[in-house]
Image (cartoon, rainbow, N blue to C red; front, side, top):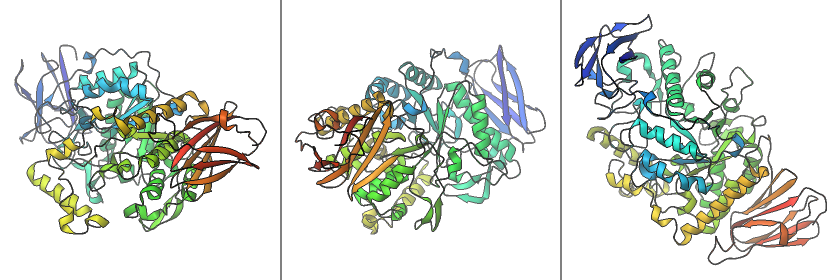
Length: 614
């Protein structure tokens, strides 16, 4: 309001609610009044402005931060700061977003991405990311959390960017700069649980959680029980807040399988419709969900959510099983065969209703009606690295030739590829799990982390589990920070050159963009080699990837003439990518093209879509 501020807070169970103003021109405590019959309290105060610190007091209890605070300058236990979002002058008025077919996502963690660990640190690296060839950054959760370091999934102040990363205007400047460079910004949002320290939200809204319904993170968020209307409204308003006030291009929702919902209208369908309706531009909504449910990314049924994409883990799990031999946990469902990879490439995920040994029930649904672009696939993400005992990356466990080969596959697929920060130069740093909770909770987290890996083959002995990094130790956080000085050296520089070349090829060729097709043509050439065939704009690409060992394969020509001297546009054995090259040899044989690999690798061939044969 002009010349002051209007304070509103949802506290349906409160008999009395007071606004506490700290310092400033009008310090003191004021009684708020109910505004309507839904438990909203309100008060207008003149003579104050942005920067004012304030708290709320429920029924003469302790002063508490605003559950919808826009900023917590002193941490999640301290007073809130009044923020005027109109104070920031945006320069992105001409921004139109990134078309879905051109989306290449780069996931990063603010605290460990840059030397400073701040929003400004990300902004300084945006020209590098643009030149790399990605088109969107996905920032791990920034909602404020207890302590100075966290993955972000322990957020408790859901409307407030963490003061560990900067102020709200710093996040706005990051998004503004990204748009100016042609990059979209997606934010990871967590609605399935609250962090264990500083979660004052249920004090204001006692119905927010349902203790009788458990998830892996504790009590379920109340989406259908008594008082759930206010909870649903709070979450939807939070999403709208991020989109409107920070000009974000979309949201990735964490662990949607843990949003337990038995309502007639799925909450996430309501969420999708309302958030899109409130946005001034087209936005992207992605879900993290291991269930392989087609209704997540469909919009043609009453149960469909209408999301734009879903993290499709089967791609990662199949490849990791093939090249690294993982067999524990959910990897028990995968045999690591080229046939499984072929099926995953053809339809988007592997499990479409088959029994899962890991879950001990059927998993998945029919993906036949889902465009390939709606499957978000990766070789690394924060979960698949950080939820390993030592936080080691896949490229730490395979040789460079294998890493090159599977990187080609990732960046040539018709799905939406996702990279995790540093993988493009085979970063030496791990990404470990870290927290900064109060000592009592911290000890529980440390003990729980080590207990979690008791069944891993290398950590069955208690003494072995002491090697698992302590999440509470500052050294664990620091070990996960990227080392930017290494990317231009030795093998790191070769991997970076490979990623840049592949992303440039994907950007230049419409046939290699994410596809709206419902099926991808792929085949197994032998037990270790896969071929994808991608077509468009009068051209046809053959992407042949050798995942294991050396060998010779014959690829049927399918009526398309291939000239090895003219049509090979990329191989992993080019001098820029390999110090000691073992050239991939291509020759014509009767009805086929023979490709000889001296080790794992990949070759991309481009032909005109005319008949001819080899």
